[in-house]
Image 1 (spheres, rainbow, N blue to C red):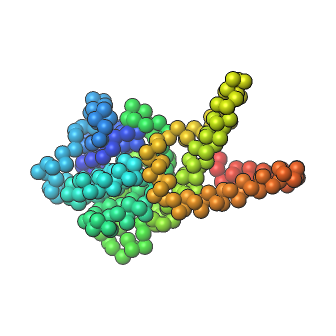
Image 2: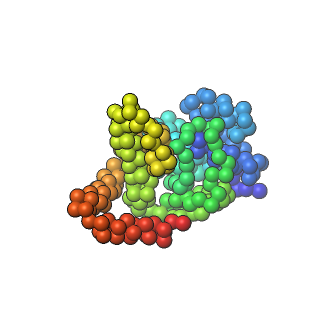
Image 3: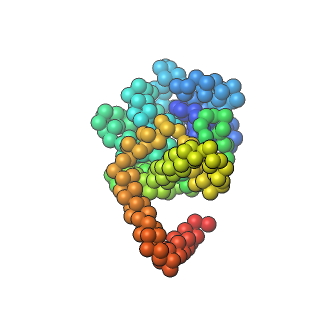
Length: 297
């Protein structure tokens, strides 16, 4: 029997519903409570049996210690800060609290500023997702074989209780078939600025650039020139504006640094094109192509 007797998920969009459904498929004996500010999402998950019941934030059993209750915060980063304030008592009485957010430093600072008694909070970041939103698109096989970043800062190494919470958090994601990668808060936020946040920013920018041009030339049939190259490279530009506004602002320093480095490479291409340097251009493309092929299958 799983150590996770009860799981509460706050936020039942695509990711929250995917987690709930994945748990149900693997361990149907685990009780899953759910909540979403969007009643349609909540009603959908209840009606489909993805979650068993609605979270009772003020329930008398919130203080019981005999049940190991893990709470997952599956909401946009800024909404997590609101959840901390609104449901403080509920979260402080949970055995373990984790999130799935793409920014960690901002959340850790908020816990410290508000002096929340959340020693049970461990940051998580499953490295998977979708540009689609809503529980109806949930994927119950989403997590298998994917990486999940679990935060383990240097100060955690001095606290045995914290280390146990971190290992239980890792155990939860392993239960869903994920590979665990440990990281400090700072390194996580810096790296995802390059590997996740910058690609989204570029996809938004590329979409804007191309669609501005095709809209301007639409009477000449410009939209007929949009094919798989544009669609593949801008798929993530259909992602949630609320989530990505939060992420861009909360990790702005690291994202700006990543954007500066991107512009440096883009200007290398621009200079080679201006010079008509065929050999230099081919060499740059070859180097990049080989590097990517060696790192990513």
